[in-house]
Image (tube, rainbow, N blue to C red; front, side, top):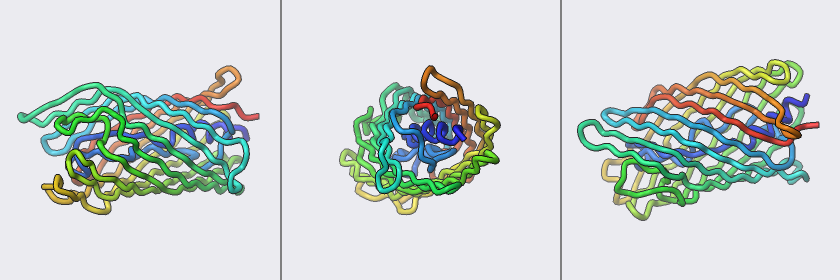
Length: 295
């Protein structure tokens, strides 16, 4: 079924994006991995060649007297090799973003500005065996974005970081159902400007969806984020402050032709709950992606 290959190639191009947000878990709440980055068809190999994506991301969240809002545009480019590597498909990606952010501490201080996010190169391997599909990935945060340790609103996180994980997708191409889950962990290097080192983070993204014909998709998405080790360093004067949050919501997708290529429009909405030591609210993702068209 062509839908499987087209969606996999498109979704492979938007597998990781990153956001800085204010909170007291991680330094300033600046998580390297943006929870919710993986979703439908995460582990299914796609069509070889170049894929591109553009995502509008909106986030509104609050913790105690601190509120934050982010409006960002993420761009990604992915190349999937046409020849097998270790009997699977190797994809290489690069992601970046720009936009605006505002942070407000009630009756104390506020800050807002525009800027660019850190660059994020990534690599992934995918394998398929009938309805079962498998993924391993790794990505690196390159501290190249707008960052000032004295500002509340930051786009870069101020340090290097490494994230890696694995995933699984069950896809029944006859019935049109898919279930995907991706788990990963993040290691954060020290921010030398603040002498602060974030703890190790763990995260799980998941989705369940139904494809209706060759054009439409309906489903659910969610994520779990848990900081598993405390923050440390001279700058960690308030203790470890391990963060945690859960989220769930709906998603819809639509496939459409773009000349000789294939387009995909996807809308995801997450509502966060059971947050600890980090802001909670809601976030929305609107993505358009273009990929090689399947035969």
